[in-house]
Length: 64
Image (cartoon, rainbow, N blue to C red; front, top):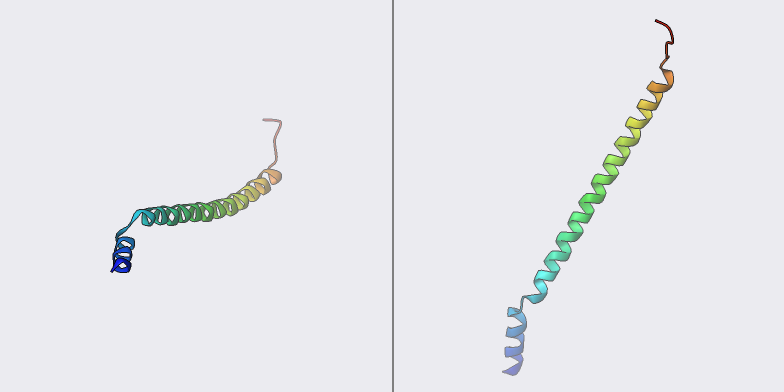
C-alpha cells in the first residue's frame, strides 16, 4: 500500500511541470528570435548591396 501512496503523491506533484513549461517557452522564444535575426540579416545585406551599387553609379555635378 505504501508504494501506491508514493505513486499517487508523485502523480499529484506538479512542481517540476512549471519548470519544464518555462524551459520549453524560453527555448521557443530564443528559436523565434534567432530565426528573425537570420531573416533580417539576409535582407539587410541585400538592401545594403543595392544601396552601395546605386551610390557607386551616381554622378555628382559640381556646376549648376
